[in-house]
Length: 460
Ligand SMILES: Cc1cc2nc3c(=O)[nH]c(=O)nc-3n(C[C@H](O)[C@H](O)[C@H](O)COP(=O)(O)OP(=O)(O)OC[C@H]3O[C@@H](n4cnc5c(N)ncnc54)[C@H](O)[C@@H]3O)c2cc1C
Picture 1 (cartoon, rainbow, N blue to C red):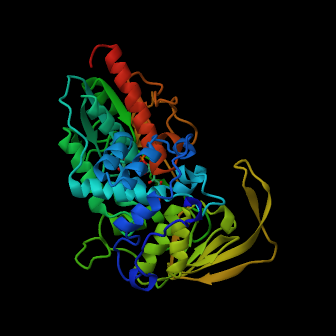
Picture 2 (picture 1 turned 135 degrees about the horizontal axis):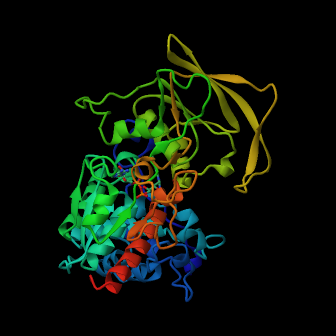
Picture 3 (picture 1 turned 90 degrees about the vertical axis):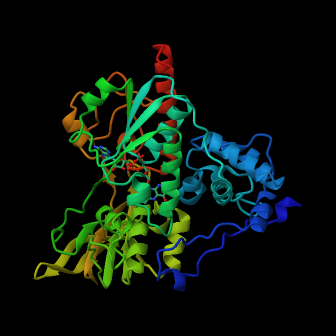
């Protein structure tokens, strides 16, 4: 009986090996494991898993195709709703989405490993050359600003509807956080490059080194195109605002990860330097903090992760927390930095206080409060701050007509319609730092609304 079967674990590089390289940690299911895991799906009449997927992948259908050995059909099923399945299969927090609602979760051996199966199918699609189909442009033109998951997803759906799309990316490489933030050992960059190539093959033009608000202005784009989507993300890092934060050896996780991921600073031949502390303290406990900690570990450091709440409140994906622990990252929980210590301008340590959890705050999580007289020092020569990010103000500053919140996020309705006609927005730029799949969902909703608008005015 299917209920007796436990969820199948995905093979991974052993921790002692992987801390010495940047290759992918999770190795993916073998065909045997994929089949065995697919057989655990109960094919529920009312598939709750689908309610947890922001892009609406038909999960039971693609799993049924795997069970029947119809991998091409499984791939086509996934690709019809998800423009980036190889990415989602690797980095989505499935435990809080589709897998959270799987009825096997509690008592039947654990949720079906939907993410691992999606990855398996997406990798099959790439190997078999199954791609989204190009549709001839029908005359309407759209500009898409940014090339992160929100923009990639929006551009793909627009192109599938016959809209001629031009993407404008500030950096020299397309992919957003998928290329500059998430490390190679979690998401190999050739996978992101492949998705961008698929878009190009669909006729999408991808322009890099184009900072909208500097190189080209939003009002120029609105004049040239029928509609515009802004998916510029939330790349501006927040800091601790404690004494010592300007010392040499303190950086934001975004800068550290960009140097390593995008500029390949870990390779000897790279022209970009990166701090290589021997003892690194990382502040925060989200995916960004885990990525920074695990990257510093691979650069040879002893790493301590400092977080002011307890393990239960850690926002990172469960898999990343587990992998970080296996790799020897030390967790100092219920701990908050109050000062970064230094000598001769360089970091020598971090003064911290112990915290305890009090009453719930506005986010519903219990508020951490300092324990009096609990100060202690952590010795370190590098501090990486991973406390969240907000949207870069460049778009708003260069185009004041666009309504934004006091936090700098773009104000838009559920379809991404902003305060400016023909201008849409979505992803982290609208919600603040969130997840890949939520950004993709937003990109898809905006694409749908843009297509409606283009049809309504006879452009499509
Ligand atoms: C290190 C790290 C790890 C993460 N791990 C996970 C994870 O495991 N799972 C998960 O679901 N989420 C994760 N996230 C969050 C996730 O990556 C983001 O929520 C998602 O990428 C947001 O997508 P987006 O398209 O809105 O923006 P982004 O991915 O940020 O892309 C925005 C793009 O716009 C470009 N841009 C910005 N301003 C301009 C401008 N003025 N002109 C032109 N281009 C511009 C940027 O260069 C960038 O390429 C992680 C984030 C980070 C930083």
